[in-house]
Length: 79
Image 1: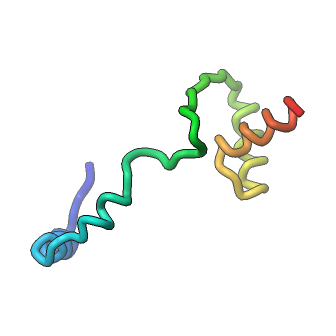
Image 2: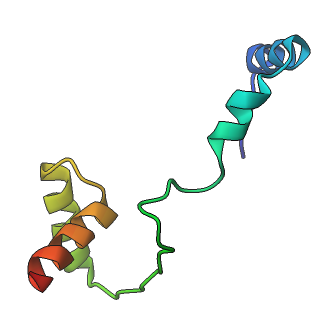
């Protein structure tokens, strides 16, 4: 459950009453940021808990997300 404070509600109300910059709202977009011009596909991969821990550890050491680490590993493998 998500609890919103009275202070946060007031900030949102003040922002709405002041009006929104439409140009800024239109630039935002929805969903995840695009990685390129082509549509991407989601590929499911099954990993053991040990493999997943190793992947997450390697990603953390390189300051990468899990997805970035998988893409880097695949690029290295395919090279």
